[in-house]
Length: 600
Image 1 (spheres, one colour):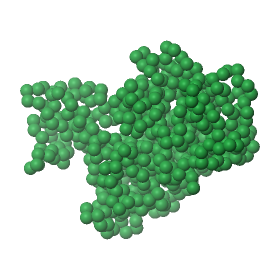
Image 2 (cartoon, rainbow, N blue to C red; image 1 turned 120 degrees about the horizontal axis):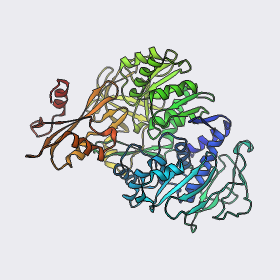
Image 3 (cartoon, rainbow, N blue to C red; image 1 turned 135 degrees about the horizontal axis):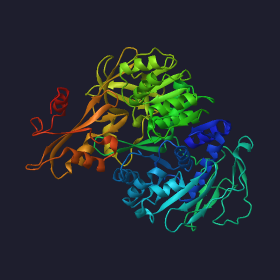
Image 4 (cartoon, rainbow, N blue to C red; image 1 turned 45 degrees about the vertical axis):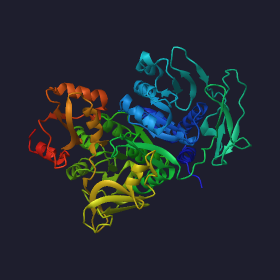
């Protein structure tokens, strides 16, 4: 048995070819056009040497190119490594290096940080940039002009060429002059046109029709595979119009998340992990079907956005309205103008949206479902959403990157329980585990543990962390909660020290290590404190080296130069001495108590 998410997209594109797949800045991209672009990018990546098992990092906001690149990489049997677009070059370099990514795919406004990161990683072959060509050149500093940076020019369903962004431009010809409109191919067939081998005067291409799914393991005779020249013109790569067969348990995506070591850990999600989660969202949560519309305000580089918005919607023929940057007024206006039906977001986003809607009072009657995840939704926010969006059902879910991400959910048609994160989803088991590894009784607080189709294979290149995260196949979430006698799960507190700000995971030790590197800082402790909109804010406590003087503004600037903006402390407080226990460990609980009492 084989399973490749790219084939599910391909089958949906064939079935819903004339339906809009993506709406972006007024541009309507049909499933046929999107599939054609995926096919062209597949050939291009193959030509650049990407093949089965390779890892390719992606640094892109919510733009159509993200979806195109995502399925093109999977088509080749390669592995997608989506990266946060807010990371600094140094932070990104760690992910590229640790994930063994062969290339970095970047949107034009991320070109500088990707070029910087690529320089720090010996095994990275270069940066492939897409978006607006002129903007790409503008965003690229002169110092990187001679680096291995390649331009991917895609005008939605027509890939014209790839050129090196440098003082010496090298053009790789990739013309599709003989490829007819994908929409007019016979039902069940995909058409393939061989690419000219670097020759603009190539003769008419030979066309081969291949039934969907009609492939074997590896190259074979009969026209299924095609030899494509690589970037250096000396090697040959192969490409098939049907996705490379991958096993259900093969890794499809590596998602990096904060871990107990203070360094990001790469959760290996299989094709079946993501497929089963997307199918639950499609069939149980949303009922996605052609004609329905959802909006992508969640970043697609995050598992919540990939599963709940991208994969589940596209497998069902629904339409994604893409918004590259979250702005409450712009999002609400787009939702109304584009008749959006389903909205998924983290609590911070939803709070901003209902507050904006209470001011604008737009017609939001077409919205019938709002889903919250990423962190706990306050009960007060739940009631405000119900009042502000009266036609919508409000559903809270729970999960981790390690669970693809959904593990529990409040389902449509079931009795709502405000404050609960719902019941276990189909194909997943959720229990409460005591410290002695036995299971807790209903109503008893313990650690939430999960096992099932949605649980990751393990952490990439980190067997120790993988062993520490599983107990008898149960994933330890690090979150404390309880299950009532009706099977509803309630989140009580986090066992881990992870801070969640606006739905983004922040691990205190990473910030502490940055501050510890400051020459005038002696000790540091970072904690999260409640915030009515963001969920939590980051606060750092520091003590100075004897005789040194610390300046508040200088410390904030120091952090901004070394950390992504969302990780930077909102407050940095100077203490004479840290509160410690008998073993010398800093008592963070006491620091939080001081903040709640207004002390410094």
